[in-house]
Amino acid sequence: ERLRTVADWLAFEDLVSPSFEQAVLLKTKQRNDAAAPATVDKVRSYAWFMVEEYIVCESARDAAASVEELGAPQMHAELIRSILRIAMDKDDKHRTQIGELVSSLCVRGAVEGGE
Image 1 (cartoon, rainbow, N blue to C red):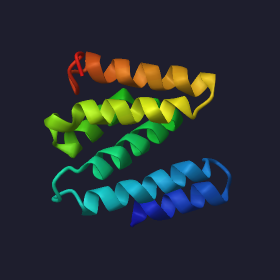
Image 2 (cartoon, rainbow, N blue to C red):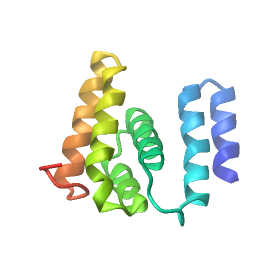
Image 3 (cartoon, helix red, strand yellow):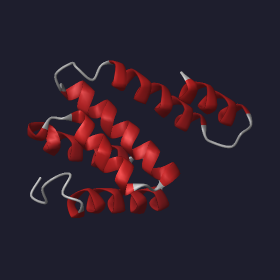
């Protein structure tokens, strides 16, 4: 709840994009639904959150933690596919950042390089 309040305030002050505020709301929902098994929709929502969070914060550690929170190694290939699909809708600068995100997930061992 505190995180949501801070995100609302930051968005109100135009210190973050509205998509970041949406990402915070999605992350809150994900934490509440953490016990649910991983589905394609859940993986896609994690992918969207990870991309938006990485664009704002550029924290590979947080991205790797999100992969661990997902807790579904069998869905990593779908996660990477979803991240790459999201990248296609972004501008060149964000595509580069998303490429760095995927690379950092591989380097940190959060996902396998073959995925």
